[in-house]
Length: 351
Image (cartoon, rainbow, N blue to C red; front, side, top):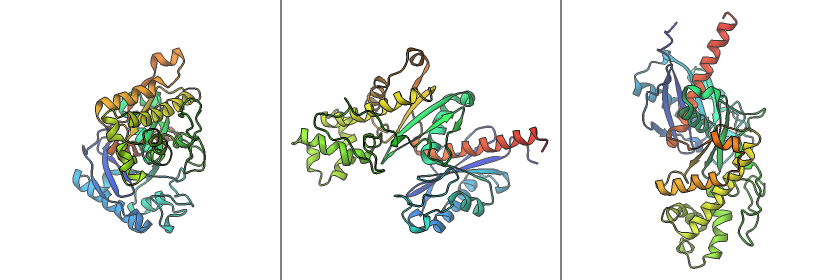
């Protein structure tokens, strides 16, 4: 049996275009300090995608000089929707549009291909787990946190005592589809926003890139009819430019991001009353911006999060760190905790 400080786990972050991989050793040290990317091939279907992950796995082991016999487990994260065990939804998704993905056991297929135990999380949960461990370190298993990650949709995760809350079917932590109060959030005459999931007035319908394109920007361009973004050629293109205008303190862009920050604050207010976390994280493209804009956005979130006096004294508001690497690193942390849990169980049962 290997000494306790020589084995490693691998984190594999699967995305719509690329995979990212990392290695985490038994002492909790990452052996990769940068992105290690390769094509994901998910649009080609399950078989090419699994082979691409196998290639990413082999590549990161070669890069770090780690032998296959040193790998105890692999953490895998992917976009959703998928079950808690990594079975892709029967309805597919943007990333898993190929018909072969419907009801495909992604985790099981990767485990069979690599010959190593694989633990699964969706990408939002993996990033949330990494942020949690980065902030709390040795106290991570004694703390809780909630992360809201603003991207094309609104992802994130709920961490309690260092563990991802997945729920019975794997859909716990779907923060974007929690309804939030709209009164006082919307402008005069602004329609209640619609989400792609079918809900009206959930968090993602306001705080996401899709929300900017479909709901927020069309309204605010009516209030600023001479704005340059009206000449962008399409609402989709204009939506992708809004952040750059926000960084320049453009009034229209700031109205949009203020609505998004308020919406996240309202969601955190709800969360304060059912999980009472130690920390709230915000991540995503809206945070990957100029420092002044980033701090303004996070400060706006905090101002619109209503906490009890006892909570306000101890809670922390933070930014998800190293977001490009957070998925792979969070996936690796989940694998490390699985190995440690199995070792503890074996000792308790005399195994």
